[in-house]
Length: 286
Image (cartoon, one colour):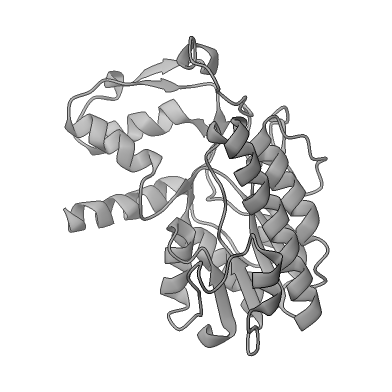
């Protein structure tokens, strides 16, 4: 698909940035031109010439979504706006690509498949699950569920590197298990599905490799930063959030099955290899 036939929603976010690198001539719009949470704005926008909408926008403040204002914002962006985009996609015969989350599941399964029943534990997950349902109303749609996203901008890897560089010894959650997803892998998977005209529907897409904890990843980062892995203290989720208020419950098992996306012809690289490449870009820019 030609770049100019793609419209990226959330073009300045981590995934949006990676998508713009693959689709340098893709269209996007500032909020004063297109407010996806406003039905009239979405319906009145000029969608001529657009063959695919990539929705990389989301309200991702998991704990913030538990507040009165955050709950409204989460549902507005993650559910209502998605329904507006689905309606436009159907009306104008546009393919809608939407990014979802492992948080639509309760984290009780060791491996989550695309057909697993939705069972979100928190407001953020509930709003994302509602968005999943809305996307399905668009006849031409790709719904991609992902987890633990790392790209350009603030993220877990950069946070851990910053702590290591300052000789801080953090406590990191060790009972939440999953895989990292680098935005270049996610963007490449989206491009593959669209360009290969894969069957429409839901796909899991993360990096491949072993399932590990946040603490395991932090240890890897500390070693890359020239520190000791022992500087990272593994703790349980309950211990980490003890005494803190307004904390959303998290799924403990977030590993997503990659069988379907692999069968569609896209094989994500191992997260450790992707982390090595990402780390190289960090060092080159510093």
